[in-house]
Length: 212
Image 1: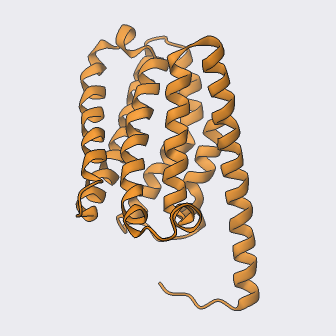
Image 2: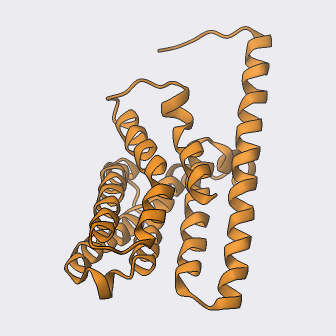
């Protein structure tokens, strides 16, 4: 639906949005730097994967809310149209790499490796398709793949937890809200759910809870 806003109400809405974005992006940037320092100190690959995952999801949210076009490439409409799909593919890829390393999937759940490989290959395909002129096709591939990646990693972590791998509990706690908000956002993008505060900003709050 189309809404007409009075100037005072619009100004308040902009201030609220800027506050939300400021808190979120500041938090994610801080966590990226913190985990990068941990990686350089410990040299554990899971920290590097987590840094790359959060960097990509930061780029994805900048695109979703029009901030990348506003502040980074205001005169480049090609990047404005295609960067969202590119960051979607990268987010899926690095989230799978992090989950696989953190949950020690190769050792504890070798039966899940094929699933990780298939979704990873599909995410790389999305990245390549994002450079094609038809961004609509790439978007149709990226959005369902985001949902599939979220559901599969949740299933993998739950299975690991049921098999006695205790770190999976922390993974599930951290990602539970993000997974739920991500699925809600995907249904919103497909038009199955209305646009409101929860569907619009749920992934931001979910990611904020996950990184903390």
